[in-house]
Structure formats: C-alpha cells, structure tokens
Length: 298
Ligand code: ADP
Ligand code: MG
Image (cartoon, rainbow, N blue to C red):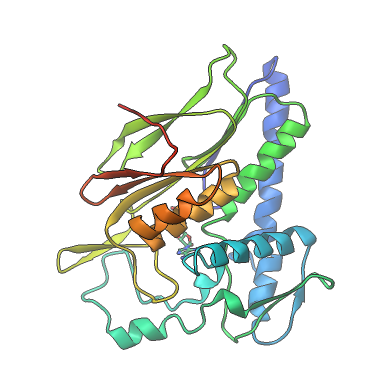
C-alpha cells in the first residue's frame, strides 16, 4: 500500500510465527489489489474509470467498505470523504508553490467532490460515481481496514496476541508473553523522535495523523496536506490527532476527520461515540483529550 507493515505475533516457536506472519502479509496484499487506486486493474480503478458513465459491479467486501466510508462521511458532516480523490491538485507540498491560490481556484477544485454523488445499489452490488471525473481513494481508511483484516485472520488461526503496525498505526490484541498489557507510545509532533505519552492497549487500535511531514506556509500560517473536502482549504492549527478505537479502520478514518473538523467540533463528535477516544496536539504544543482517556505522560 506504499506503507510499511510490521507484524508481531506471540507463538510457541519461530516456525509457527513465520507461518502466521506470511498469512497476514498475503491478506494485506489481497486487500491492496482490491482497493488500490494506483493499480489500473483494481476494482476501485474500474469504479473511477466509469465515473459519469455506468455503475460497476464489485465484490461484497469492497461494496461494504464504501458503504462504511459513506457512513463516516455522514457522521463527520462530510469532513471525511473518500471522493476527496477527485479534487484538483491546487495544493503542492513539495516546495513548488509560490503563493496562496485564489478563492475561485480553491472553490472550483472541489466541484467533483461529494460523497452524496457516490451511488450504491446493494442488490446488484454496484457502485456508481455520478459525475464524470469523480474519483474515490482509500488513503485515509485503507491501511486501517487491511490491519483489521490481518488481525482477525490471525485471531481466527488461534494467535492469542499480536500487533499489526501499519506505518505507526497500531492494532493490538492480547497481552505480552509475560502477561503484561501492551503499551503504545504517542509521538511528540514537535519532536518526532520523542514519544510524549504511553497508552495501555488490550484490544484495539491507536492511529495518528500528523502535520509534521507535508505542509506549506503562507503568511506565517502552516497548512497541512489534509484538505477539507467541503471547501478545498487545507487544515491548520493542529499538529497531530491520535484516535483510539476498537477497530483500526474507524480510528484511521476518524484521525483524518478530526484534523478537518478542528479541535472543538472534533472532540465534541468523539465524545459522543462509545469506546472512541482522542488526543489532539495543537500547533502550540497544547494537548486536548476526549472525556474518558487516561494517558501516562512521559
Ligand atoms: P497518513 O496516511 O499519513 O497516515 P491519514 O490517515 O490522515 O494520514 O490520511 C491522509 C490521506 O487521506 C491523504 O494523503 C489522502 O490520501 C486522504 N485524504 C485527505 N483528506 C481526506 C479527507 N478529507 N477524507 C478522506 N480522505 C482524505
Ligand atoms: Mg487516517
């Protein structure tokens, strides 16, 4: 997925553990083939190629992933939107931008974006993107989904404890061989090599979205690579969002969503969801947490 996956399993010997790890890798590769929008032969590319032309029949698995993604769009008032992929590339984060684009250009960049134009037909298992040029992409949810699938496969095989680490997004089950619970670190966004807190995780996922890799600065304001699909403007003010949830898929999608929604709306929304917690660090290094989280600050 253009992402590094590290897999840890607790097993009786290394032959067993290597077998489990290859099964998990096969599962992640299988999902990548289904959801990648880079692979011209994936079902996702087929949907995109037929935007504005015709509905495309897809596997139940992909259909249901899209259905859940639209559910998250509704939950976040469109802050999360897999059709973000149809946005014009107005923002470049490689140092090549010389100034802020005009309001008109920014506004026009999102005309092909909007989850309400993703039309699903359950009986036929078809997906239709209503507007020509529309596209969907799973950049903010696919890693989490693949991690969940690999984890549930390993649990089904009898693996009692393990960690799927998808480029820093941690999906955990069971306890360490000595019986202690796993603890996950949250990176300090103001100093990438330092952890700022540890969080015990028994069964669930901790996913972080950060602004410290790709951004541009105009008039002393830093804009990140996560863009509000409703306005075309990149987010500012937040350095990192970590979301804890029972499933990595939801944690992944919500971390991106909170970035877009901002501190107040984001925390408010998270506090209404059972079993979901969140830690936000703003660009001043100030920490905000949801109501029911306890972190051991380092
Ligand atoms: P990372 O991939 O660095 O862990 P995220 O999980 O936050 O970061 O995902 C960011 C990616 O999600 C972007 O690179 C893009 O592919 C996609 N994306 C950006 N904005 C949105 C959005 N508003 N809704 C859904 N996906 C988005
Ligand atoms: Mg995400």
